[in-house]
Length: 293
Image 1 (cartoon, rainbow, N blue to C red):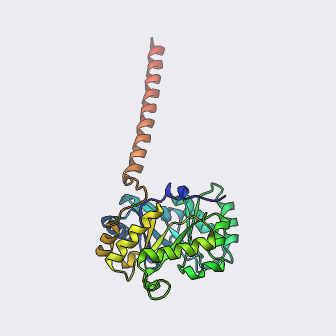
Image 2 (image 1 turned 60 degrees about the vertical axis):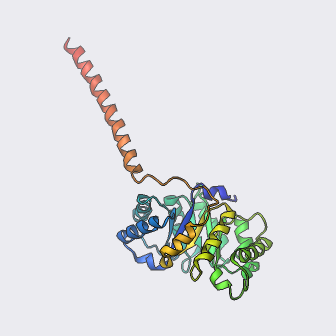
Image 3 (image 1 turned 135 degrees about the vertical axis):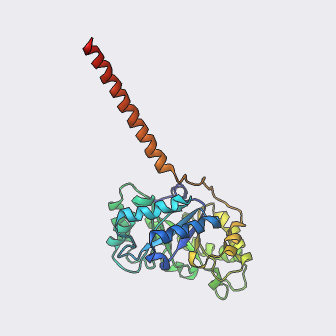
């Protein structure tokens, strides 16, 4: 079964900021501080790298969910991802299934096609709920024709996040082209290889760009009418954030999650339980009075 853009936008919305390798040894308190900063910049969510494909940067499922919950406290969605450099397709599926059950989708960065079909077969077994897969890999349009990730991604029905490295493309692939024309060129290559049915959620690298170029990229990205992922927290500055936020959005942005939602739900459940208990006590009292009479 192929997933659609709607399967992604039902979960991920708005502007998402990646976290890379430097954050993989962070404590929950460090994530808390960083997430608070990300919220002040105006982002809607975070995507922390939490695995290399073999091990995980959290000890238990509860620890994983604690990181996700910490983001929600600050009004951010959270989408952990696996950056595959080690492990087997079976192990990737184990980790992605765990993350999908915690967050709502699997997010994986795979740099070679050889084992992707095996990974997907195993993932579908471990995730019968059909939680979608968002896949990304290194951005170089001239390599799309090799079969990875284009045809492979289409065959497996995953939603793909193209990585646009405009700062490095300027001197070669996009020499002399402004950002919007560079993206057009990359898009055309992608569609030629993968076909028009491919679903794209862009990952944009802003490192080394001017503020004006970043705003141009962000403005153009609105045309996809999808979430936009920005790489990455380690090089984000207030100036870059302002340049990103200066662009219009082309996707729906949900209202910020209520940080007290879980507590409110628990209180409501407790109130219901207390009301039921009180009713039972009243019934017992009424029966007791009847027995005395």
